[in-house]
Length: 412
Image (cartoon, rainbow, N blue to C red; front, side, top):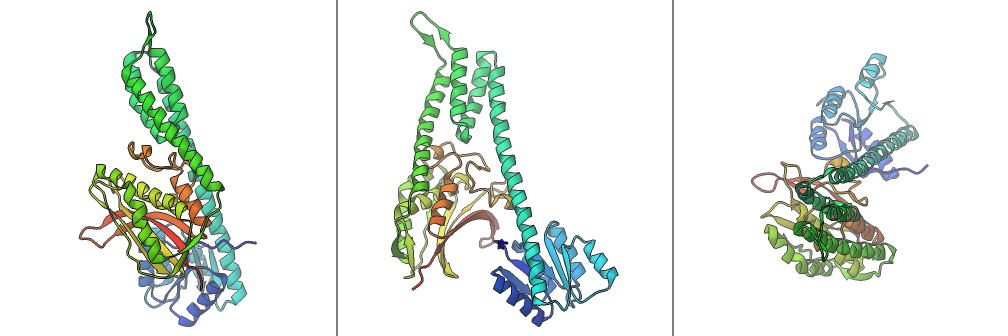
């Protein structure tokens, strides 16, 4: 059976170092990310600021008892999977602990393979639950899109006067910009047909309605070009060539500069990475122009006015990480909920209202931009993540969205 390694580490808490060393050995052999703690207060503080897939804890510890630790963890994230590894074999204690919603209870001293078997079973359950959650969210997004489209069709069907036609016009345009495309154009044609007046030499058509149809048609042509570009990218093999991390970051500046003129509408500026490293990357330059520009357009669409998009890079654990960070609104919430992080790169998924101007100039529309980014990065044997962070580096904390591109450093 394939072992599904979680993206988020396992938190392990035990006050005895030799026990932590055992966990470290097992989890390292299994290739599972983890963080070890001997103090419950430190583990709890880390849990509040980071995301963990599974928690493993002892019970009888001096700084904080395991039951108290479990209760505190459950207050923060009620559905977290928790394993207890303890030498306390009293049935009353075990029952009390299991009533807290613990996934499994392992008695010490445990053998290597016994513990490994429990961890594998827990990871499999974690993976299944994550997949169920993603499928539920994905289905909900598809259903939402279908309902919105049906509502627009129904609103058009129910109009009975010229006034109601114009009242629906703005909604139809927004529907188009949010991805309804052909369906919205067809509905607008029906609206023109139903409202136009026949004359001796032709027809009288409302100017606003016709102007909107022409504008949406032009945008639709642009989106069709985007779909063609996407199919070309998805089918293409990467033409990789070597360049240093320093050269790559210098090129990022050149790739961003041509699109900055579109950012003046919201008075958004951009800062660039400065990484002076001779480590070697293998990059398809043409493909990565699309990656960088799409990430910048995506950041701009949802950033707040009069802010700065920060691009920075660093090297760690055999990867160069390129990061694009933008400030987003807290009220109304403009970030990415944790449960949406993994499905946001799926085709046609969009969490917030699109930017009416940017949709006309960005290369990829219809909620496909991040799908293309993820595809290109995977063809570079890299990884892509996008998620919320809270920035504490300024006087007032800020909610931000961070897009992270992990590119492997070529081994010498």
